Length: 432
Image (cartoon, rainbow, N blue to C red; front, top):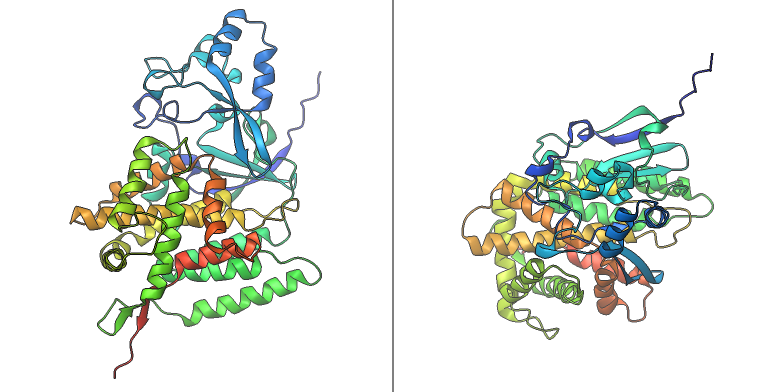
């Protein structure tokens, strides 16, 4: 009798929502087969080329296009599925099903199509991390409608469960401090005795002090910094509601608006930006009268101060738990520092920039609507923004370089950009 093959078991760490997710397929209000760049991985391209199915190969030759895309590594050849009428994938049938899956086999789908919105990593060849993207309409509601803080669970799975799925950065190793760094960032962001604004400021300060540590005694130094911030969390109290003796600092407001302006103008340079999202960015710039890269207008400063006050008074008290969960999910999903990448700060920078874009869109929507935003409006804004971010990381980083890069390294430029986005704009005015 043939011996039963021993299963390889892996430890998986995942948010507690993972077991609840299932794709709602035909009922999806924002299908991932429409209006999106669907990238075909290199291994799938090779498999398609070797196929003996003539009809399938002919269909693929019409549907797959190659284009050059700017990345940090330079120009790279990216294979994508050509979009047809209505910006729909050419393989999307009228009944909402995929032609590739229907006519051939599910294994012929690209890694992206078989995996999304799940994100999977195998780190240090011993443990797996899984999470969901908030760009998916079903996932974003599952994640953000929860009331309790996001929890992460560990369990064992058979390695066979991952067969055929997209594994990001397989074979890479995390730096020693990466996991404790992420855990502490999540701990800070979930500390509900502080305002969300203050939690973000503390998390940002901690990241830039501890994120790039290396060399001798790095672990001990990291622990000391973590202890210092743990003590800070114990002594801080919830930020009080704005009162008459708190006034805006116009210099900080102007710097913050300048950073947002540069960020939005740089995003608009991306020719692949979706038309509806481009219009949203332009509306934000017009709302704060940021018509060019010239000086920040006084009227724009006054409007921004008013919008931030509405945000602090009417949106955060009701929805800070929702925004907290969004941030924590993104830290877990995207915040990695590997042994091979010296640019340790890029994950945090991108995460923070995406949140600030969401916040700016919410600020202007709240101001112009004249009523409180609903939970569904906030969730939809997060989902759409996350979906549109796409492959334009260089456009995001360029905004920071343009504003702060004179005489500074990339790391310092991006650090100052993050600091400028999170500075408190209110100062306490002492009585005369």
